[in-house]
Length: 342
Image (tube, helix red, strand yellow):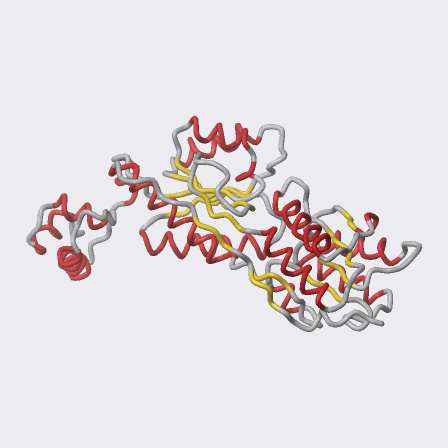
């Protein structure tokens, strides 16, 4: 017969409630007692019944809702969330969606009801949509948001915020320090706040250095390789002076820019410097390797998951609300940026 929680309690010399608290990783049990319980669990080969946990009202799984075409971003997000779930004894329910779909709110609510998750990790643009957030809050489901900004925007829920604006300022300043004065900007999807934040950082750096950008060199688009190719071709076909550098809003766009430049016979970086953002595999697999802003996606996802699980436990225990956390992407200088041509 399979060992039960009462068998563990008997071997450890504790009550079965203490075993339950240890298995559920509650903070009220001391380290020495936890070690005694885990020793008994391992000796007996006891496996907690996660479905029973759910029936008792304790969260046994969390959900990850996303709408992002960047497979590298999604994989890194899943890796970070799963690492924390495995560490803390939770299962993960993954739900890709179309954030701009007509029935997106109904879809999210149905997912919550169907999966009975204890909480949600939300990424842009879902995490930045006030209507979706309000609907989730009305369901009394805890959630943590990953979003763009220099601080938590409100007290609706804990969040992990990424300071895209400051990082974009730094990467633009890097190009300016290399004597580039005509720097093009290729934006990402407008529904993602990160695209606007990175544009503001770019504009601020130019303004602080007395540089007026050519507005026809600032092109909106999508966070995709194809969008980078298309807009770079448009830049290279413009009448008038060509930019000597391109700030692409992510590495996928930057890789598209590099591809289009090569097809057009433009030497990178001798004739055109290119910088990206995120430090995804695109930046390291391209040749030359791309200068970028390092955004530790897996680490961000793991911290967001830890915040969510801590929030679930703090609510259950009536303890203090969990604080939000911030990340500042760091400049990584590689071979795709160099001094502007004379």
